[in-house]
Image (cartoon, rainbow, N blue to C red; front, side, top):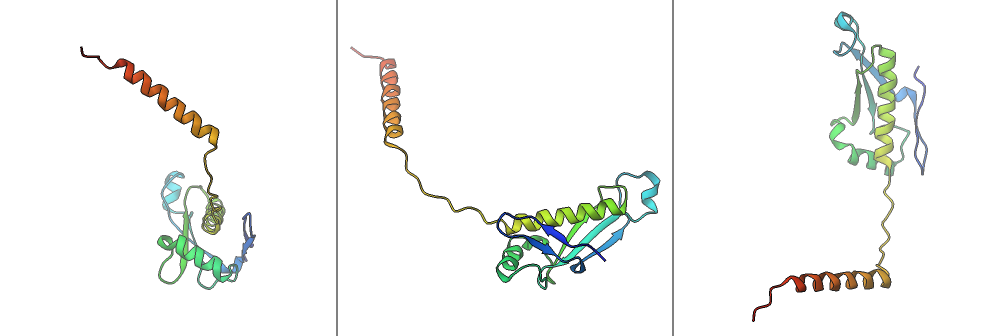
Length: 144
């Protein structure tokens, strides 16, 4: 039985139940020499976004739209890890990647507040423009 996967967020804390995650191990390339030809260390983590109880409807819609290119037509999000030399390392790496993906997808950008330049900054800009214009005017050749 898998442990729950906490997804840290500033606004809301989401915990994906371990029962909703399943892993498939397969042979992979990478470090390990000849042992990679016989051991199944590559891990693919699956999570069904469409039926999860970890997300409310707004969060589910946000994840489905932001991760649309990574979710198949059945609503399954797949994360692969084959960096480590053991299946255990790759399982943990896949869980961390999933948590990062979901946290990024659920992040709501802060709304920008419209601002105006101060009077002083506008005045300084105009003065600099006048000075620059004067410099360029002095460089011009005067014809007599």
